[in-house]
Length: 133
Image (cartoon, rainbow, N blue to C red; front, side):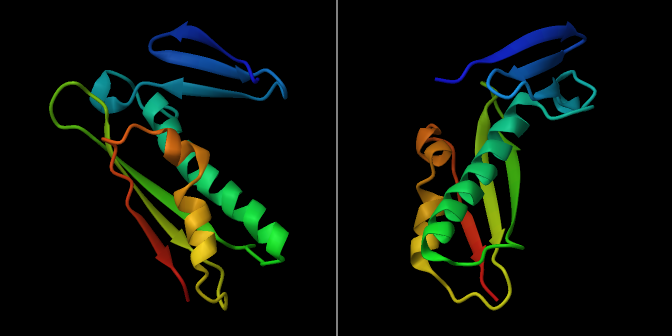
C-alpha cells in the first residue's frame, strides 16, 4: 500500500507528497480549464503515468533478458473530449527504441499490458506506435 497526500494550495494549485519517499510535485489546472498551466495538470499526470509505466515494465523485462534499453524514449500525447463530461479521450504513445535493437514483440507486449494501461477505462483510446531502427 502506498499513500500520497494532496494539499490544495489555492488558485487551482495542489501539492502532492509521496508517502514512502517524501518526493513531491505540483499541479495546476490547464489553461483550457481555468488554470494557468504552470505545472502538470491531473490529467497530464495520468498521461505521464501511462508512458512511465510502459517504460518501467519494458525496463523490467529488458533487465531480465539482458536487453539494453538505454536511450529508449517515450512521448505521450493527451487529447481531451470535446463535449462534456470533460475526460481523457485518447493517449497516444510513441516509443523510440534504442538504435540497433531488433524488433521484440515481447517488449511491445510488456508495454501494452503495463498496470496503468490495464487500469484506464476502456473508453480511453491508447494507440501505441513503436519505432524500431
